[in-house]
Image 1 (cartoon, rainbow, N blue to C red):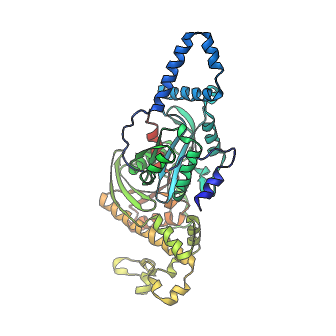
Image 2 (tube, one colour):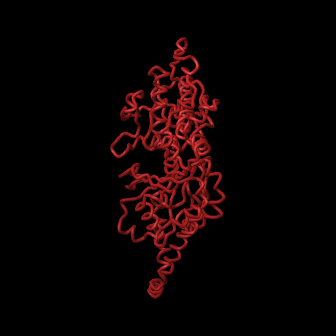
Image 3 (cartoon, one colour):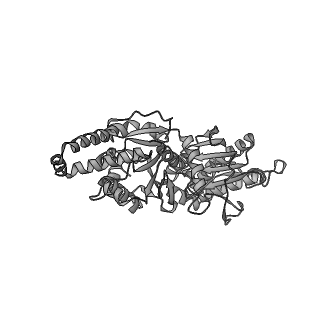
Length: 446
């Protein structure tokens, strides 16, 4: 979808724009800016004028409403500084190679005094984000993932989860400029590669300063935090009871003793981390064959245009018409090395035959692409777990969103090839942990 349509559909009269959205780098110390000091100067001036007499007081009452809004914003800024927490709105942003993930904290304990002091643009942003589930034709709020009644920095509220394609980021930044979002924020916490790629655009177009955060730090902090608060009374982490059974139910898993764990983050590409404690982890390896590979190949092979369409086609396909199996070579199992006949011997191996190419449907090609990418990830994850002597493997990332086929295949592969020694774990908020980690860093900024 073109960025023009995103902007046009999100900027309808009477509605506020979605805030700036969506990754890496260590945060640098920030110098106080002029805007942060202005309210202090304004208060000092008003105090001295007040001392001059009642005539000056009357003059102040006659000032236009724009000054009242500025004064309200100044009072809010001073109050936040006093309480050592950042100004609203609170966002965390993860700008990935394919998707932008944004989390927004909606305060639910706003007092009458606070509401009266709020500037209109802040109210509009909150109303726009929380009263819509779609923003334009590509922005989505995952309502089913909303976390209710959280307490962050002493404030009670709900946490919302929003995503949109990274290619719409320029329109998003322009919208932030048009809605004067910089008047509410001085620093925006962002992680993911896009925090570097779009940093200059945020600054020059949107007048927004990014605080770039390391994406793996944010990922781990986000996972640990979300697991600690749970999912509205339910467990955040889960596994499949019997991975071999397509109808197997998912069961809650208590991650109260998470260490050590192998964390497999499947986005556009894949990173695999061995995590020994909150602050002790290492990137073991990764692969360029990830969710972006699956979607890109499906676009080429089938003509699909969305990730959802690619998964739908894969759900109706038969990969055995595309892949060459062990039984296609041996006529059955390869018993000496314990390889069942259904094992994939060569992904897309049957496509060497013109006859089989003509017989394969687009759905078959999509299914084979999904199986190829998923099998590769599972194989690498298993080897890493064995090398690191870790038996808990947690798979996260947006590749797994609405992707039950891949999750069940990963669970089955780890269980089968490890003879039950490895357990594949998954999380309800699979793709949003980086954004949550960025939000947690924002709350550390006084």
